[in-house]
Length: 418
Image (tube, rainbow, N blue to C red; front, side):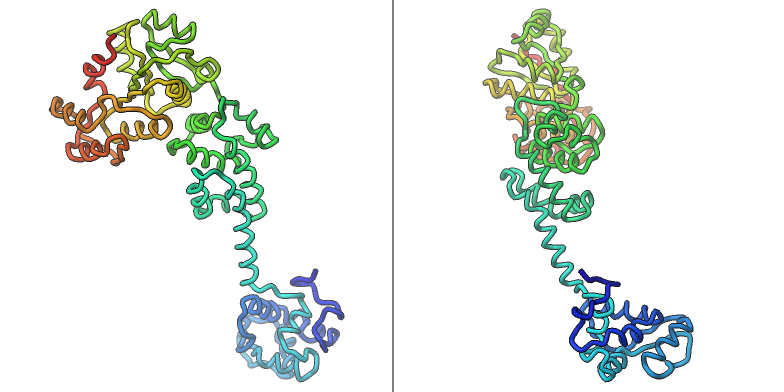
């Protein structure tokens, strides 16, 4: 196929074009700059009229222009050639009866219009995103954002590579969340045919992890620990031992039964709650944000403490797996956290992934605690919503103080009594 730098054969050249004479005249190396600029105009659908100027021409370029036009160009530091004059020379001489455009095409090959190229590229990119159309409805907003934000273009560079990338991403996301949980390499081997397909910092891992966050509501973040927890939120385990959850008063495995009888807190790994979750589920399980609450409950109530789970900040994969198990088997989850913007974000992240009811964690509870704490520290940070009680956001904004869980410890301990 012809292209720039690939002249047409005699059979492909335009009608009546004299390729030998054209090559000697317009094909002169001294006119390469002229032919190149004419091609650029043709690509942009610009008219082949008016002057073209070359700054600091060589003597070879001046001689070639003189031969083309049949006269010496004007003297000066630059060289100017009028395209209308070149077109007239080519037509009148019979070298290219249809003028300059046909002559340049015959010399250098067909010219691709930039408008056509851009349209073809736009169509190719639209086709590249086609695999996203088969994703489940809850990923539709994420897929639409992915089309707009440029992430895929930065990762894949070309429409062809992007289509392969998104086809594989869609194949992975169609089967998530994984239940029961599986190791990330095993999942990649099964879903994608390559155990390393979802290794850190690969384009595919970046796209799939972005989709998982949209699917599970996992908060934004960075770092190895964040990635591990984000994968685990969809049932993909990079490390089933590092993710843990702190509990007190749960039963249903020999280890839990023994520790509950001893009145001692328990640290469960993701592996334990995945492979051997509690076989019994209490009617109500209390959930707190800070380990001080759980430690004090163990000291106060010992083996008689009501079942309690502690998030220790953002809910880990182990905590989410345990709480989902308890909820799905009939337990009502009651949650309390710090009365500040960070606490509300943690509570919201948990609520997006497992249902819970507020445990002294409403606007009324906040106002009562604030009134009883005259030296409460000022509230800082960026406001956020409280889906379980919209009035709580307004109350924090109005009173502007932070109430930590430890401040209302006595109220929480009263509910945890036998």
